[in-house]
Length: 414
Image 1 (tube, rainbow, N blue to C red):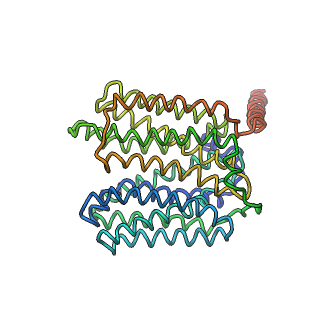
Image 2 (image 1 turned 90 degrees about the horizontal axis):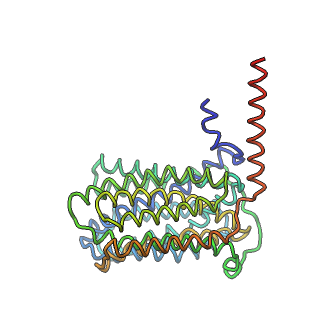
Image 3 (image 1 turned 120 degrees about the vertical axis):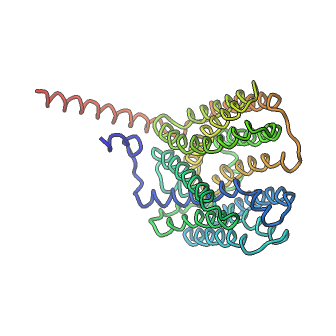
C-alpha cells in the first residue's frame, strides 16, 4: 500500500539512487545556503559593520558578482574536470562564509560579500547542469521538484536551529557553513559523465526560439516578484502587519516546498507548459488580493500564493532548461536561465531599502498582475519540451496496469 501511495514519484524513474542523491543534495545545498543568506543579510551586515547603509551596498555587490561569475563559470566549467571544479567551488564557499566570523569592519565585510557572490555564481551553472546530464526528460521535473523540497526543508531546519540555539551571528554563520557543506555529500557519490561536444556560442543559445519564449516569462515573474518589495515597504509597521509578515514567511516556505514537488510530478505527467501558466496566474491572483484591499489578511494570502508559485516555477525551470540545453553548453543555458533571473529578483527587491522609495499596493499590484498575465502569451507559443510520445507511453502503461488489475480481481473473484 505504501509503495502504491508513492508510485506517482517513482514511476518511470531511471536515475540510480546514488545519482539521484548526488544531483539533489549538491543543488539543494547551495540553494538553501543562498536563501539563508538572503534571510539574514541585514543582520549579518549590521553585526559586521554596525551600519545598515553598508548592508544596502553589500547586497547589490553580492548579487552582481554572482551574476557576472555565473557567466564566467559557465565558460570555464565546460573545459575542466567537473568533480574537481565543484569540490574547489564548495570549499571556496565554505571558507568565504567562515571568514565572516573572523574578519570585521567595512572593507573586509565588503570584500567577503564580493567573494560570497563569486562563490555562488562561479559553480552554480555546472552544479545545475547535473540535472540535465543525469536525468531523462520524463523524470527531470520530479528530480527538480525534489531539489526544491529538500532546499526549503533544509532552510526551515536551519531557521529553527538558529532560533533555538540563539547563538547570534556565530549561529547564523555556523548553519550557513553546514548547509554549504552538505554539497560535499554529493561529490563522493556516482556522477554521470558530461557529454563531450563542441561548445555552442551565446548567439546560438539566444537564437533558440523556445529558450527565449520560456525565458521571458521567467524573467518577468522575477521582475514582478522583486517589484512587490516596493509595496511591502509601504505597509504600516503595526502589530497586525508584523504578525502577517512573521506568519507569512513559514507559510511561504511550506507552499514553496510542497508545490515544488507537486509541480514536478504534474510536469512529468502532463507537460511543462501547464504548470508554468498556473504559476504565473497564481502570482497574478496574489497580487490582485494584495492590491484590492490591502490588509494583514491580504498580505498573508499573497505570501501563500507567492510560495506556491515560486515552488512550482523554480522546479519547472530547473527541468525546462535541461530539456532545452544542448550537449557541450548546458552550463550556459543554466547560467542564463537560473542565476540571471534570480539576480534580477534579488536586486529589485533590495532597491526600496537602499533608496527609501515605496509604492502603495493598490497602485503597483494591478501593474504587476498585468505583467504576469501577458507573460503567459510566450509560453503558449513555445513548444512543449516533454515529448508527446512520452506522455502517450505513460497513459498507455497506466491503462495496461488498470486492465491487469481488473483481470487480477476478476480471477480472484472466480
